[in-house]
Amino acid sequence: MHWRRILAIVRKDLLAVRRSRTVFLPLVLAPLVFFVLMPVAIGLLARFLPIDESDAQDLERMLRALPAAERERFQALNPGQQLAVLFFSYQFAPLILIVPLATTMVIAADGIAGERERRTLEALLVTPVRDVELFLGKVLAAALPASLVDWIGATIAALLAVAVSGIGPPLLPSPSWLILAYLGGPGVAVFGLSIVVLISSRVRGMQDVSQLSGLVAIPLIGLIVAQASGLFLLDWRLALSGSLVVWGIAVSLLRVGRRSFQREALLRLG
Amino acid sequence: MEPAVAGEAIRARTGVVGEQVGLDERLTAREILTFFADLYDVPPAVQRHRIPLLLEQFGLADVADRRVATFSAGMRQRLALARCLLHDPELLLLDEPTTALDPVAAHQVRELIAERRREGRTILLATHNLDEAERLCDRVIILERGRLLVEGPPHELAAALGVPARLSLEVDPERGAEALALLERCGAVARLEPEPGRLTVERVTRRQVPELVAALVAGGIAVYGVSVRTPSLEDVYLALHQRAERR
View (cartoon, each protein chain N blue to C red):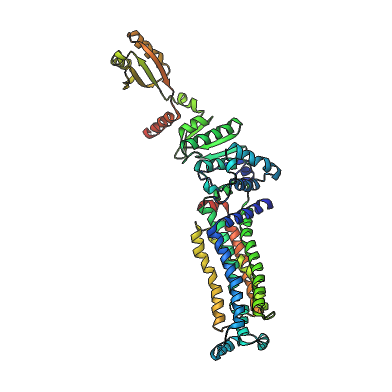
């Protein structure tokens, strides 16, 4: 294994992404929305949102989905703060997973399907680089920045939410939020990446990859809807087990993707 | 070496430029060369002098830090050629390197290939441009539908295959028609050119040339100029193609 080749691929892919406005802009906008605007808005909600009688009843219904031990912690908060904690730490928590998912998929689609679309893949495949080195280079180029953006963004989001709302842990951020942000985020990133690898070995262009990979975000939306309907709320046990399951699926899919990532197959499609 | 087993080793000793140059337009020429130098395991110390040298040799030093998106087709092709020389390969595989280039750019690229040839490198050039093949190659292989038609040095192919030459004659302008009749009586396939006194004789062998000139002189026709145009690779190819069609 030649790590210099792998690092060269990582460096080149990231440099190319940074130079491409259409690829880079979404990578900046998504963290801005989910890691800056959303925590600030929720923090302001805790301070200034008036809660009337019917809102309080809805709030009560949503709190009932929490385990008793976690519910007790809410007693010390006013209704606005309770709503803010519910939104930030539970209901909208899965939204932060969109950032690592989108980041990894955009970079991987540009690096794999985009390489074919720009007709630059053949020049890569005639170099001595091995299939596994090319695969690792492409995977790291997408997964590393996605995880870094997730970790740094989540830290900024938590600090902003605490500073604006005046509430602190373990309510905001909650253990389940922390697990999702720091363990689930990279897991979702690797999951999205493995999907792009699998799709990219079968389709020609970035547009095909984008269309198919959009489906990956559907389970996250389902999670948010399920919580909003009061079906359940993500406590730390669910967040931990869910994150580990995602990691397990992601690694398995990535291994399948590695097997389909063969230069002959890539050239045939090109 | 068996490509299926030693693919990596073979690729490390080979430089390839495909019909598509395969350059990421978002990167600069220097960035592309540095990236590929890393993929070809060129040590950083060697990269430091080889990359500027190649940029200089291929006329790209002034635009080394400009993005490839701003490059002309000729500049891209030169950059692709520079890229395939980064690791000092023993064998160069060039697929239609001058296709889609304007005449000036194509000439520059041919000059660069000729220089590499003079350096003693082995170059396998795939081209539909027979004039290019004739000018650049020591040996040619002509394939038709994947079948080998002929192989050898381009200047020897015509003689080996018996492809006839063309003879141009300049005679007394007053006696052009007379010269034509005399040549035809000798069995030559000749025609008068628009310019007075000029004749062309098709499909002549080397042996026929002095015989035809002697016949003209013996007929009292003054001969001012004789030029034999040896068959080009294109003539060879067309002759081979016609033979294949007849079969």
